[in-house]
Amino acid sequence: MKIVLFVFSLFGLGSVLAQTNSPAMLSTSYPISSVNDSGISGNVWLGEYPFGTIVAISLAGTQAGNTYPAHLHIGNCGSGGGISVSLESVVGETGLGITVTDVPYTTLFSEDYYLNIHASQTDMGTILACTEIGANAEMNQITTPSSQTNVAEQTTTGVRSEEFETLETASYGIFEVAGSGINGQVQFTDEADGGTQIIVTLRGVQAGANFPMDIKSGDCGPDGSALLELNDFPLGLVDPDASMTETDMSISTFSEQNNYLTIYSKDGTVLACGEVGLGANR
Image: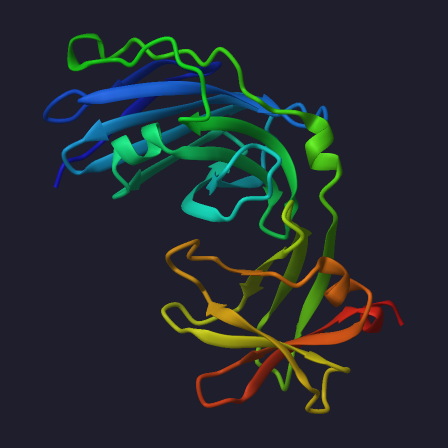
């Protein structure tokens, strides 16, 4: 097993040293721009190695004690595209987040992706910073093994803060049932195509277990009419700490009606529930 050690500049990824058996075969970096004057910005560095692709994020403006979820999404900044690659969260004390992924470097570099930095696990809908990745970005150069410490510069980011302001979000608490110890939050985000992205984050769950979830009409308790079956928690291919479901239903279907979300064990026992939409406001 190769051990990868990174030495970062306090002010970004201008000096990234990857100590492995060999230098990165290809590498590049992109500046990360703040969204809506969040004060968070930085760089992301991608390096190709025989064992996978390293994605290293360095941010300025983070706060100690906070962690900032990061994902690669399909599409362009502000488009509301689905999560494609889940990354390690950025630690507020250091501003750093390092991920080794088996997604090929050539895939990330040649296709349309963007990187979102989220406010927190319980506020995924608030985007603090973003950058275009791969084909979306205009690049000056790609580094090679003979010049591994030179990083490519992105000339434009394509970030337009007004795009983020048009995305409607709604968040609701999820509460334990019968002393299960499981609770969390569900966040609904309006997508540009009129659909909705639903992200569930939970606390108190058993590691390695999967939990079916659904949304029904009515209030927690009675067995209401089925509205939408969600992907199980956690959806490991997206994020080990979250589940994400995308639907063609509009966000108003959830936020302007009386619904509830239920978390189940594999045997169908109700472990947690949360009112969604009108029921949460009573």
